[in-house]
Amino acid sequence: MKNLVCAACVAAVLLVLAMPTWVSVPAQTYVCIPDNLPASGGSNVYPFGTNTEWRYQMRVDAAWLPTSPFRILEVAIAAGRTGTFTASQCQIRMAHTTIANFQNDKVFATNLGPCPTQVFNGPLSFPATASQWCNLGLSGSFGHDGTRNLLIEIRFQAGSGNVSVRSATASVLSVRRLWASGAGAYTATSGSVDSITATGAAKLLLTIDPATVLLAPDTVSLGTKAAIRLVQARPGEYYQMAASLGQTPLSLPGYTICLTPDNVFIYSVLYGAPIFHSYAGLTNAQGNAFGTFLPPNLPVLVGVCVYHAAVTYDNAGLTGASNTAGLQLVP
Image 1 (cartoon, rainbow, N blue to C red):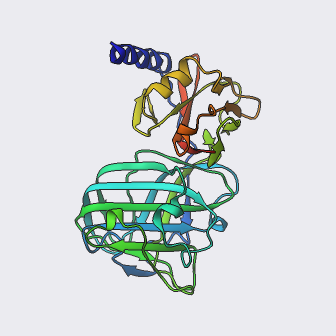
Image 2 (image 1 turned 135 degrees about the horizontal axis):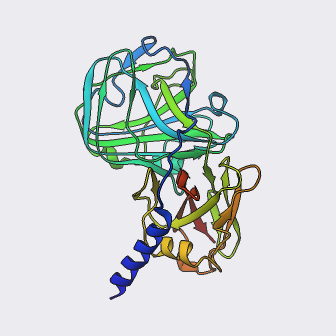
C-alpha cells in the first residue's frame, strides 16, 4: 500500500510539471581548451586507446572557463584516430575543485569532493573521426559557478580501447590528468600523474549554456540553512525546485532533470516546509530564484548527499531545466 501511495504521489508531481510544452532553443556556445585545433598537438592513448578499464581525472584551470555561472551540456575530445569507442559501463562525474594540480592530490574520491554531479552512467558508445571533435554523449549537465577549477572524472569497464586523443603541447598546462588503468582501475583509490612541468591531458571542447543554472553549497551543517540558487533563468517565469537522494535521469516533455523521484523528491515538491522553503514561485527581474534548504538536526543524516534541480515554466509549458547540484550533510 505504501508503494502504491508513493507511486500516486510521483504521478501527481509529474502531471504538475509535464504540461504542454513550448521548447526554446538554448543559447549554447563552446569553450575550447586550450584551442579549437583538433588536428594539432600530440596524440596518446589515455584513456580511450588502450586497456579495457580506466579511472581518469582531468583538472581544468578556471582561467580557461567563463567567469559567470554556466551549465556544461557536453564534453568532446579531439580524436587522434578514427574508430568507435565502446564500454559496457562508464560513469562520468564533474565537480568544482580548488586543487592546483594532482601532484599532492592523487586520491580520486578526495578530488571529487563529497557529492559530485553524475552526467553519465551506463553503457557508452561514441564514434570518433581522426582530427575532429567527438562528443562523449552526456545524459546530464553540470552547473559551474564561474569561479573555481573544474574536475572531470571518466571511469569505465570493458572498454574497446581503440580511440586515441589529441593533447596540448607540454608548455600549455590548461588541463592536468590523474589516471589508473588495468584490472581494478574502475574502483582504484589513487593514480599516477605527469610531472609538474608537463601534461598529456586531452584537449577539450565543452558545450555550455549560461541559462537556468542551479547552484548549491558543497556541504551544509545539520540544522543550518543553505541557499539553493537558480540563476540566469527567464525573468518573471514560474520555477519549481526539487530535491532527491539520487540522480536518475527523469524525462519531462522536451527536457530532462537528473533526480530520482523518491520520497525526498515528493516531499520537496508537494509539501516543502519546514525543510524546503521557497522551492516554487516566480523568478525575479534578473531571472533568479532563491530556495532555502534546512536539514533537520538528526545525527543519522551526517554524510548523506542531497541533490537538487529545477524547472521553469509559463502558461504554455516548460521553458527550461537546470543541472543537478549535490550537497553533503555534515555535523
